[in-house]
Image 1 (cartoon, rainbow, N blue to C red):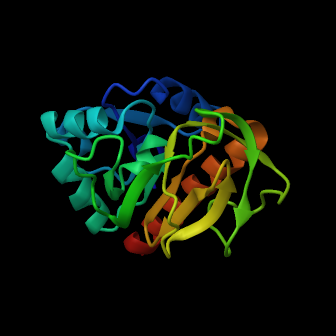
Image 2 (tube, rainbow, N blue to C red):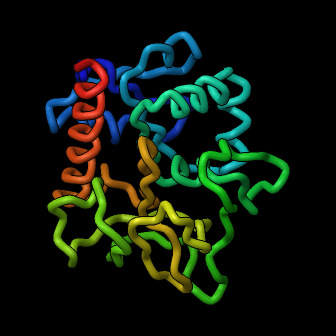
Length: 212
C-alpha cells in the first residue's frame, strides 16, 4: 500500500488532526477526503469520530460520502472506524433514531446505563473475546482512552473485545476488511499507537495480496 493513500474521511470531526499526528508519528502519510472524488481510489480508509451520531450521518449524506464509503467497504477496502466511526457501522443509534447508520454491522447503538457516570471518559481496560488483528502484541492489561455516552451493548459476532462501564459494550470489532474501536487509539499512548500500526500493516498486507 502506498502510505500516501491512507485516507481520513473529513466530515469536520474534531479528532481528525489528532489521528493525522498519531499516524504521522508512525511514519504514515495521510490524505483527507471530504468529497466522493477525494475518496475514490483510496487503498485504506479511516473514519475518525467525535460528536453526535445524527450529525455525522447527515454530514456524510450531504457531502455525498455515504454511498462511496459503503461501496469502498463492499469492495474490500481496509477500513478503520474510531469511536463514533465504530457506531456509524451499525444499522441505527438511539442517539438519533431517525438517522440510519451505514448498516455494515447488524444491530443498534444504545445509551450507556444512567447508573454509570456519563460520559464514560478516561482510561479503561478491555476484555478480549477472540484473537484480534488490531490487538496483536498489545498487553492484556493495557489501558485505552474512552470518551462516549453511547455504545453497542449487544455484542455482534464481529466483536473481538468488550469493555465495562455500567454495562458491557463493544470496544473493538473486526469483520473481514472492517475494523473499528470505541476507544481513541490516537489518545491512548503506546497501546493506541500499536493498534494504529496493526491496522496499517493489515492494510498493507491486504493491498499487497491484491496486487500479487
